[in-house]
Every structure is written in C-alpha cells, then in structure tokens.
Image (cartoon, rainbow, N blue to C red; front, side, top):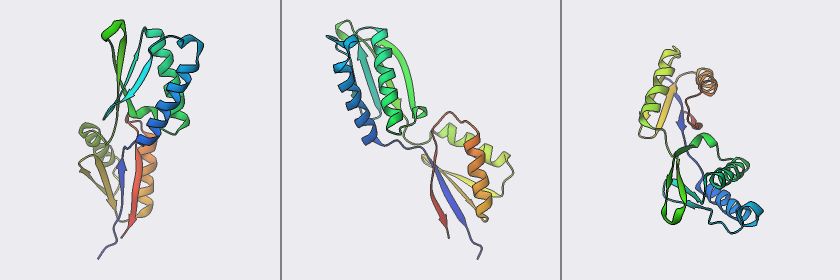
Length: 165
C-alpha cells in the first residue's frame, strides 16, 4: 500500500492569551491619565470581544492598547474582525470584535481551489472548520505549505497534525 502523508490547516486562537491581553488592557486603561474617570471597558463574550467607551478617541486608544497586548501575547490580529461602532446605553459607544475560530466555509473553498490550481499532486478535503491535505511525497506537502504561507487569504492559518502513515 502507498504511503500517505497529511497535515491540517486550522485557524485557532488561544482564549487564555486573549483573556490575559484583556486583563493587561484593563489594567493599563485604569492607570492611564487620558482614561481617568472614564468607563472604558473590554469584555470577552463567547466568540467576540466588546469594546465600549465614551467617545471614538478613547475607543480607538483602547483598541490600540488591546492590539499591542494581543501581539505581545502571540495572538494574530488577522484573527479579529471588527464590526462597526454603534451607540450604546448611557451615552457610550461600543464596537464588537469577532474572534475567528475555525476556517469559514468560503475561505476553505478558496484554499482548496488555490491548491488545485497549483497543480500539486495532493488532495485537499474540507472537514468542518479545517482543511486536510494528503499526498504521497513529504516534499510536495512542504511546498504546498510554503505556497499557502506566501498567499494572503485574509485569515490566520496554522499548519498542524503533520502525519506520516
């Protein structure tokens, strides 16, 4: 029987690192002079962050602080999708930031099409929120990984579960 090698393309973000970045952001916002007396807040929901502040300037500054903390903790900013700024209760404004967990179906189809167009001798299969790539030659799989890293799909991708059967 022929030897099959495979790897998975996933998009996962460590929630613990996000929680740590939120805590660091809250601490810095509480200490900064330009946020004294404000009700600026970052909250973590199931699949999103909710930023709220009195005005757009404070919201933007708090977002900059949060992004710095996320980058330092190794959370890629490509995994965040920003919603529009909307009014909230008490004269404040809020913004939802969706956290990407898993590869969306349309992006998975785009990845599979890119792999098929590259004429590499591998098979690509969409498995719910991951894409599995299988092939005979390890070098071909490494070549596919390098091509995927070179192309920007607009999402954060990790290459995991590299197996040799």
